[in-house]
Image (cartoon, rainbow, N blue to C red; front, side, top):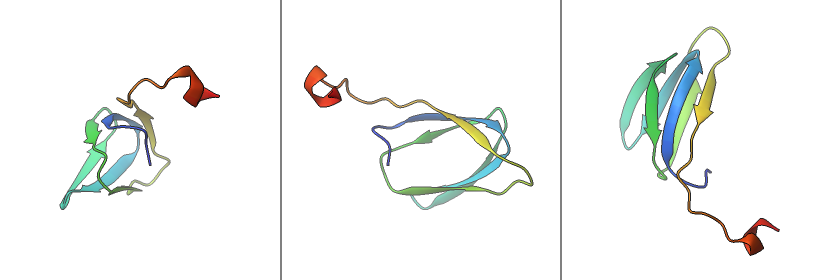
Amino acid sequence: MHEGPGPRYVLKGKLKVEDSGETKVYGAGEVFWETVAAMTVENVGTSTAEILIFELAPVKSDDSMK
């Protein structure tokens, strides 16, 4: 589970994303948006997949970071 939604950038490989009843495949250089809903991501390529995750989460107070 992630702190918040945001874009996911596929650095390499091929990923099958199932979200909200839709299935799409993304390859290197493509972006998909992850919501806070339950979803699955599966490596469907023949090599290692890597993604860069950006999260749009609220700022935490100093007390929550201790």
